[in-house]
Image 1: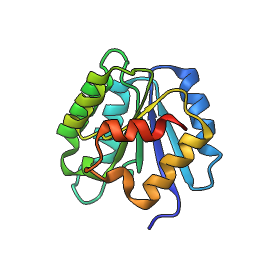
Image 2: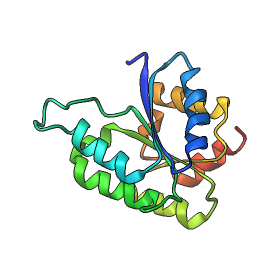
Image 3: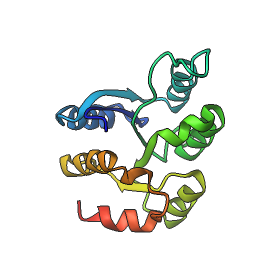
Length: 159
């Protein structure tokens, strides 16, 4: 089991990214936090820097935890995840992904299931939510495909 994790934040709001980055950087289990305000730039980074030119030797490791906002421009979080799944192939399954968004639309939660994103947190990120995510990552629970988005959302609502 890893003891320190790499986190990637994808949110088109710079201030939100900086605040969330500070929250994660204060957790001893976090090794590195990468922030992207452009989902297109984040996608290119993951495609070109992490996949690399050879399948077994990526240029940089994939993040252990990927937090994505749904409402972004020029592509939204759903399109970002969809494109990432296409380009990353089987590597996507190794990335624990969660939404961190203001959207409380039930349709967004259910659309998440189709994309394989089972963890849905509403903003703002708090120290407790960040620690919960890292604890879930450590325990392997973020990869648990048996949880529904609603269960994850309800469990995190009190955080």
